[in-house]
Length: 187
Image (tube, rainbow, N blue to C red; front, side, top):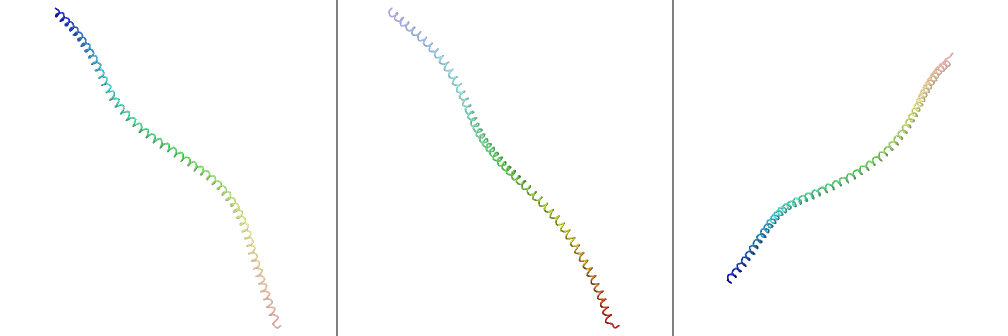
């Protein structure tokens, strides 16, 4: 009986231990199931995160490519802006030079107009002098023509006087000769 009681006690202890182990096994199974569920969730989360990481990696690569493209475009735009700035500077310099040339041309035109006005005034004065000289020459020519006419008339008168005197001298010589002949002839 003691043995049986001890066996019963052992059996009760073993049953109690078995119940405790079964409870622990059940608890471990529950924990295992919960851990497996958490592991599955964590693995799913890791897979999602890996996909996100791959997607983000692709996005980063795309963004880096876009950044490089943007930097290249910004550099090209900066070069174009620099070229346009230089073109504006060149245009402003050309406009300033053109304005300077225009001002110089305007000054030269005013000087030329002044010189032209002076030249026209000189030409007008010379034309007046020429006209006066022509009038004086015409008067001189008229005087010369009158003097030449008077000289011709005087020469003509002188010739006719000389001819008359010569004729008269010839007549007188003839008369004298006749008189001399008559005087030398005996009467």
